Image (cartoon, rainbow, N blue to C red; front, side, top):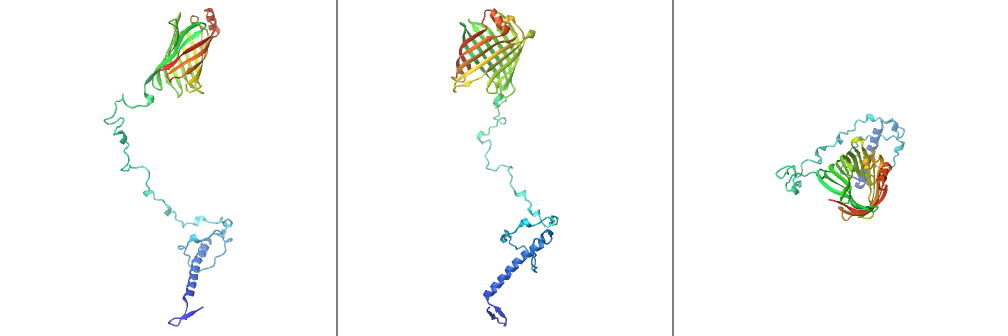
Amino acid sequence: MKTTLNSSGIRIMNNPLKKKLLAAAMATGAVMPVFAYGQTQHAGHAGHADHMPAAPESSVPVEASGMNHGAMNMSDMDHSSMDMTGMDHGSMSGMDHGSGEMDHGDMQMQGGSAPPDARDPDAYSDGFERNAGKFALPPSDALIMSDMHKFGSVYFDQLEYVKARGEEWSAYEGEAWYGSTYNRAVIKAEGEVASGKLWESETELLWRHAVSTFWDTELGFRFDHADGAPNREWLAFGFKGLAPYWFEVDATAYVGPSGRTALALEAEYDIRLTQKLYLQPRVEVNFHGKDDKRWGIGSGLTDGTAGLRVKYEITRQLVPYVGVEWASKFSKTADYARAAGESRQETRFVTGLSFRF
C-alpha cells in the first residue's frame, strides 16, 4: 500500500485506495441498519425467536427512513415456517390509517347544471310544448296515446252462397264495433236469406271489454227471429279471444224468459299455405237447457257444424273463399227436423267473401 506524507508529516493513503475504503464503510453503514431494524421489530415476537437467527450487535442507530425496500430480494425467504401464533397484533398501535382517507370534495359527480354549450331540448320543436304556451292544443285536439283513441270497424267473416240437397240460399255472419282498445260497443249478426226473404236471424248488442292481452268479455242482449216461429230474447254473457296455438275461440251463455238457457261454442284456426293462401277449419256447436217445440229445438246438444274453407287474401280487407260444411242435428232436435220433413244431416258447398272496412 502506497502512502505519502503531508505537510504536517502525517502519513496518508493514496487517493484510489482511500476511495475504496470509504465506499466499503458506506456500504457497511447502509446494511447494518437493516439487520438492526429487523432484530428490533422481531424481538417482541416470541414465536419467531426459535426460527430467526440472532442479528449481530451494532452501535449504528436504527434509522429506516432511507431504506430502499425495492432493492431487497426476499425471494429466498420461507414464510411457511414462520409461526405467528404468538404474535400480539393488539400492540401494533403505531400504524396510522388516518392519512389514507379519501377526499371526495374535489370529485366531479354526474349531474348538476348543464354546460353552457349543451343542446336545447326544445330546439327541434321550434319552441313548441305539448300542453303549455301559445301553442297548447285544446283538450279535444290534444295528443293522446293510441289505446285512448275511439275508432270503429265493420267485419263480415262470411257473406256466402250455400247449396245443399238441391236447395240454395244465402248466409251472412259479421259484426260492427266502435270504441277504444279496452271497451267497445258491438253488434253481431248472422242469418240466412232464402227466396228473397229473411228465413232466420240472430242479432246481438254487446259491450266488449278487454280483460287481458288476448281475451275479451262480452255482456248484452240477443234477439232471435225465424219465419213461422215467435221471436226470442236473451241475456248474453261470454268471452272471445285467442287461445294457445292461435285458436280463435268464442263462447257465449244465454238466459231467457221461462227458464230458457243456451250455450254457443265456436272455434276456428288458420293454416297458412302461403303468405296469401290459407285453410280455415271451423267448428260450431249449440246446447239448450229445455225443449222449444215452436223452434224445433230439444234439450241438450242440439246441432253442430264443421267446415273447411280455402281463403285467398287479395288484401287484408278482401278475402274470397270456397269451402264445404257438414251440418247435423242431434237428439230431440233431430226428431223435430224429421217430423217437419227436414234432413238430420247435410253437406253444404259454399262460396263467398270475407271483408272489412
